[in-house]
Length: 161
Image (cartoon, rainbow, N blue to C red; front, side):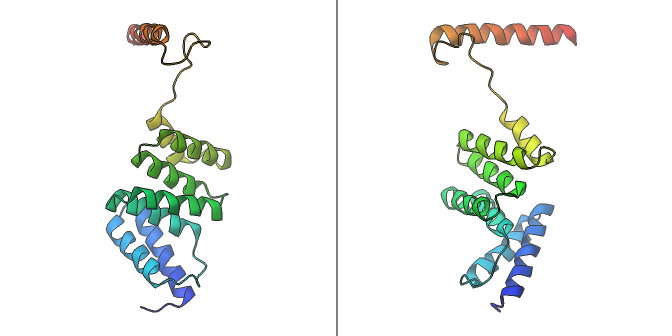
């Protein structure tokens, strides 16, 4: 495979395009070819690292490596909300809800209208504050009162519908 930096960059952009369209097989094949051929000479777009990171975490279950690639993408282009979307998705695959939430918040700061961020935020959900804030969330009284509050909220929502 040719290692011309422009060719690698175009192939990386094509791979990102396929991944965005949901064609992960073709997209990951393109991104893998770029990763194999690149010896650090090409200035690859940050989205290359972002999609490669999410792709290897999602398709190959190499989650730790995927998170590192997504973090690298966020570091290279901290102004690109799509990098934070992929970092959040990869963190969710790893079961790291806290880092996923922080990635979503950083993405929202860049583009509050990004639909993928809104979808992830809704999927993640937002915890309500403990009923008694001076007690820990896991305190038995807070847990009991939280369940009671949840039951009341569901009952009032059902009555309103």
